[in-house]
Image (cartoon, rainbow, N blue to C red; front, side, top):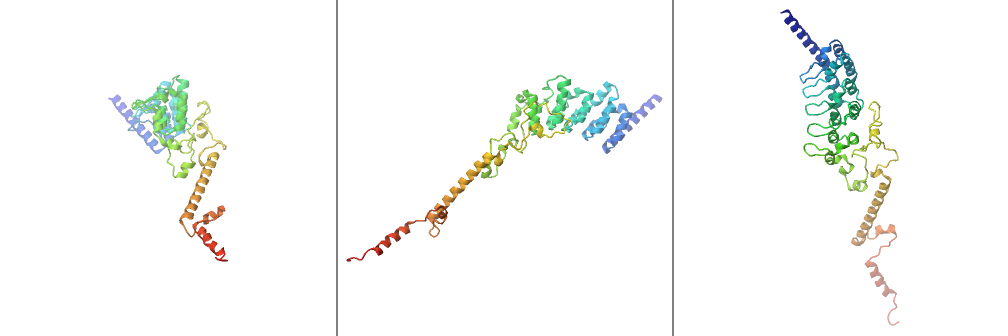
Length: 351
């Protein structure tokens, strides 16, 4: 009887701890959350929300990088097996904390690093839709998280990466990156995993088919406003995605110079444009000259046609517009005047 009472009391105490943990996490009182994690090792694996998330899930979803690092430190204080179980907890959608981190972080994936250090094989963990963390990183265009998880897979698991790059419906990381218009990342994926360019999903769609269905990805796919834009526009200009941003990748090894810990801007991964680089369009020197010559030709022809019309179809203003060109107005009336002037100069008959 006493044992049953102790068990009920212990269960009640744990439920209260879980409620306190959830309340503190929802209110953003992360110091209290960290203290509970340090003092109660059993709570690391406990799901405290209706959708099955742990406090680690919530911290990652809230973008609390320092708090996540402290929670992982508390988790790693356990045995290795218990720590792996703590970071492997899945919610109702099958997402681990690493899934959340891969969906959240862009250039500095510190949360991904902290979680993957406990169990690198979480990279292969799939949710209910067959999405791995690296797939979600590509889906959301998080290049930093993608490159870090790629290095984890390549260095520590000795896998080629094609298996975890595909979800259940056949869509790959390349499909997702192109569909989300993350073209810089798509170029790097194609370089790292060239076989994905020929992959087909369940609907028979290739990655390039998705790209072809997005005309806004190309400058030539944007509607031009007037005939002047069409005359000046340079259709041969490449290396842009229609928004002025480069879509060509670095010609060197895609894994070189892509340290996610650095503060590099996205332009360094997509190719830098020097000041002397000709971007095409109206600001292109040869095409500006061509457009200028075309404009002058059109204006000249317009002036000549207007002058010809005025000369032939007006009586009072004929020839005025030809005066700047040194052409004297001449018409049928002038010939009549000359013919009528001849009898006046002639001698009278009989003289």
